[in-house]
Amino acid sequence: MKSKVKKQKPITNIYAPVYEVFFSYQGEGPYTGTPQIFVRFAGCNIKCNYCDTAYSIKISDNAKYYSSQELLAEIEKILKKMDCRGASRFAMTGTSKPSIAITGGEPLIHADFLKVFLPALKKYGFQVYLETNGTLPKNLKKIISFCDIVSMDFKFQSECKKSFWKEHKEFLKIAKDKVFVKCVVTKNTSLNEIKRSGQIIRSASKKICLILQPSTGKDIPLAKNLSAFYTELKKTLPNVLIMPQLHKILRIR
Image 1 (cartoon, rainbow, N blue to C red):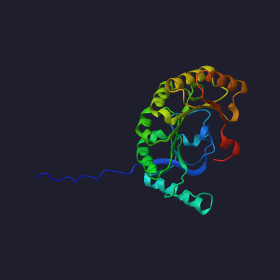
Image 2 (image 1 turned 180 degrees about the vertical axis):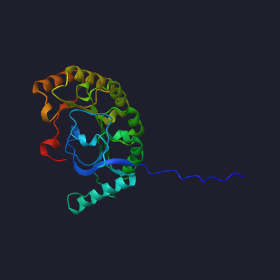
Image 3 (image 1 turned 45 degrees about the vertical axis):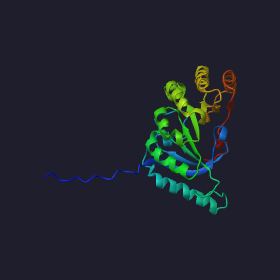
Image 4 (image 1 turned 135 degrees about the vertical axis):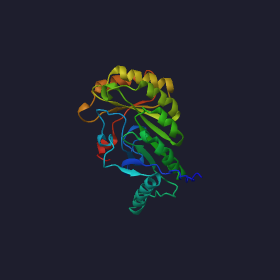
C-alpha cells in the first residue's frame, strides 16, 4: 500500500535584501524636490565608475531581508514618526501620501519580490517611483503595470565597461509614457554616446524627457562639453534639461 504524501503549502512570502528605508526629497530629474520615502534594495547587475551608492552594489551582511508585509511596516513606522513630529499629515489611511522611490543598487534584480510588494503599495494609494539602470527589460515587463513613474538611466561604455543600447531600446518600449531618461555625464562621456542616446529615445517617443546630469566629484564634465551635448540633443528632442543632483548640493540623503 502506498503511503500518502502530504502536500506542502506554497510559500507565499518572498524576501528581498534592503539596505535602508528613509524619508527625504527627490534629488534628481524633473521631480526634484518631491517628498518621498526611499526603499534602497541591495545588489546591482553592473558597476559604474561614478556610482554614488557603491555600498549597495553588493549584497553584504549589512542588508536586511524583508518580506512584503515587513517592508510595508517599515514604511508605516516612518509615516507615524512624521505625524508625531507634526512634519506631515501622511498616514497609511490618509488621503495625502508621499510617493515611494524604489531604488538601489538595481531594484529590478528583485522583480519577483516587487511583483508582490508593489501591488501592496498601490492598494494603500501610494505612487510608485522606480529608479533603474534600464538594463533589465524582461524584469521591467513583470512589474510595469504597478509603476507610476520610471526614472531610467542610460549607461555608457565610457564609465560602465560596456554599452546597453539594445537593452535600453527594449526598456523604453515597455516603459512607454511612464518614463524619463537620465544620462550621467562625466569628463569621459563622448559626443557619440550622447548622439546615440538621443536617437534611441527619439525612436521610442519624442515626448520623453532627457536629463543631462553632471557627475559630482573628480569626474565633473567641462561646461563646454555639457553645452555641446545639450545642443546636439535639442536637434532631435524637444525636452532636454541639464540638472545637477539637489541632494548633493543640500547634503541630504
